[in-house]
Amino acid sequence: MIPDSRPTSNGGLALSYWPHPTLTRRATAADIARHIEVLRLRTQLPTRFQVQRFLPGTLYGLSAHITAAGDVEIFEAHRQVVDEAGHCTGARWTAEIEATQITAARAIYCRLARVPSLTGLVCLDVIDGRVIEVNPRVTASAPIAHLLSLESQLRDHRGQSFHIRQLDVNTALPIPFDSIEDGRVWRLIQTVESTFGVIALPQGLNPFGASRMVFVNDDDSGTAQNFFSRQLGQWPATPSDPDATQP
Image (cartoon, rainbow, N blue to C red):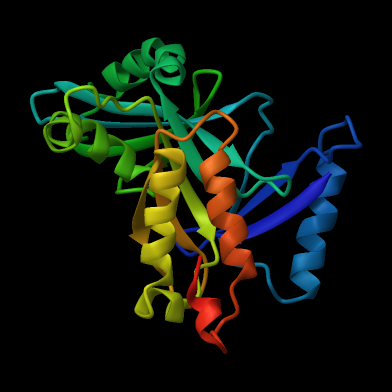
């Protein structure tokens, strides 16, 4: 099993055990106890942490708004993208993905709507219709709902044949900060659209770590995203010659 210790937004620690590709067993109580002991010896164990039961299956995300009257508006349902270490690195929305989750989403949110004083934005992580995490805040997948709400305006701008088929949120792009200032990112965005017909939208450009982008209407294999990522990998942190500024 692959242990993963990550700080949570409330200052605690989430202990997760993800199945290694070459192993088939789940984490045992002894595995978790050993991992906790290692953290304690390293003085990395906080006073508050949680251990969640492993649930096999695909991880999905849901977002909805609950009104004070108990009405529910479901914004979207997407599949989360998780790397081999168990870290979420993005999300994918298609109408087909959403259709597989919408019935379970309605059932969950209708139950939540009966909870007194529970109102506002509620984002959930679910596996097989079971809630594993609650985020009463805007999450990295928020651009999905936002773009879906703007589809008619995008159609007015890009032509009546425009339709959102797929949305990919990528939260793990190493974009050099100087490439933002010197225009390389903007030129790469233009190249992605002219070459693949995919709209690339910056969502959070971080000079100190991974940045976020949303890709509109990429193909199932993520061809445009992969091209974008490969180009980033070829850029030096600071271009040393004029050719280095070309995507």
